[in-house]
Amino acid sequence: MPKTVILMMVDQLGAKWLEAARDGVVDLPNFDALQAEGVTFDATFTTNPVCSPSRATVFTGMSPSTHGLTETGYDLGTDIPTFPRALQHAGWATGAFGKVHLVALLEDWAADYRPYGFDVVDGTEDTRVGEWLDWVELTHPEHYEAALSTVWMTMAPGLDAYGPDRIDLRARIEAARRTHPGSAGEAYVLPFPPEVSQTAWITDRAIDFLRSVDSDRDLFAHISYVQPHNPFTPPADYVDSVDVAAIPEPAPAEWLDGSVSYYRQERYARPSYDEHDWRRHRQLYFADLAHLDHELGRIRDALREVGRTEDVLLLFTSDHGELLHDHGLLGKWERHYDACIRVPLIIAAPGAEQGRRAQLAELTDIAPTVYDWAGVAPPELPVRRVDGTEETMPMVHGLSLIPQLTDPSAPTRTSVFIQSNNSHVEASPRSWARTVRTERHRYTRHLDGGGEQLFDVRSDPDEQHNLADDPGSADVRRHLADLLTERTALDAFPNSPRQLFRIGTW
Image 1 (cartoon, rainbow, N blue to C red):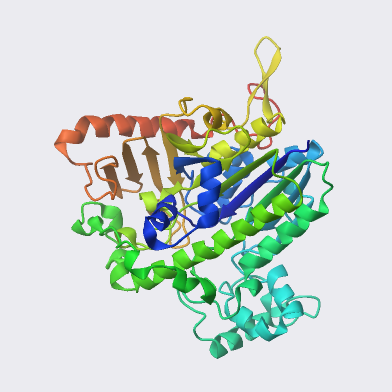
Image 2 (spheres, rainbow, N blue to C red):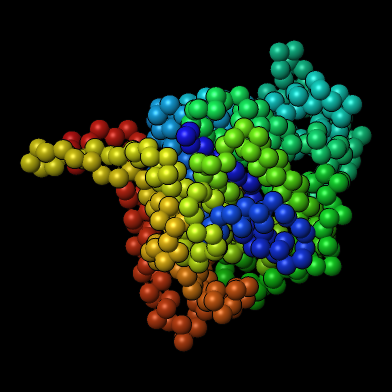
């Protein structure tokens, strides 16, 4: 029987918000069904809370320090092994649909992702220009101007000479925004129906791929949605599905006391919930989840249609979280609060013992899990010893979660390490942060004198009481500071494969 691996990703979904939806905010029946069939890893963390580095980690199983894509603005080298390429070389049919983002968007919004291991790529990313926009013009011309108004990255290259006719698309976008002024800001309702949306287009392309592959061939599909990345833009059909009264209030901005010098910047003069309609933002964010739930149902229906339900590994996750006004903050980056760094991870596979797992996991674990389940050998590094003998060592950093699927007591790691480097706002060590997270504590150091945070997340899940200067927590802080130093130093081990001949030689 052929094997099937489906990796579904969304962008900027914190695990906290998927959990909040189940507290009465919005019904997500297809996510509920997936959870009932699979295993939910409640303590899964991104390695770097921004798109490109975390996605490179997903595909390689390596930390950003090792694969080299440490911040947006870098590309993942095509010489770095990825699990899609390994599956492709083993004869699998491979496809990517939606957001891949292993290349800097402002370098090439129409990047060719086939060298990373995909036979078929139908891409559409944050810019919203390219395949999806062209499809709207061709098949739904009555909605094309409205679609143009939603393009928010007008700094993308080549827009002034776009397509084979080299039209000035930037001018058209600006004109469309004047006609549709509501398509602006951090949150708005899409000015066209759901079937025209970028989200539905991604599902359509993925379903076409599932139907096109011979039923006796192993198949891998990466189905990756841009939403609920900001701007939060659900179709109108889903907005009223959210119970606004049940939306939780933001966690207060405890950093306003000035104890952490990183937050003594002009851009943190006021908490975000004082400047924005946080309730409306959250309503549209949750409405995006309702739309994504519908698309998940379509994918599950398609798998049944093509007979790929018996031997299938289905993984659902996100690249990083979204603060969504918790702590008076929007977005992600170096603000390593729970809503920013903890991501959903649901895995369904034959023989899995359904339920929840409290043990720590991270995005490096996805690649080794796929290698393990698919029966494809993970890449290794060549090592030369002093006596002239040669051997190999593992290349991936993560741990396969397959044992966890069948044995809830299977051991995993005792800590995870999270890094942030230069951001869009500032390219300096002041925007760098390093975090170690254990089952009980989160310890973060903001570099360049930015200060420290220490939270007991068991007794203080909203991270309101910074214990970094608490005399009673001095021993815990010292232990975690030492652990952070060690994890920082060892973050690039196993060694990088970049331009490697042999480890230990000359």
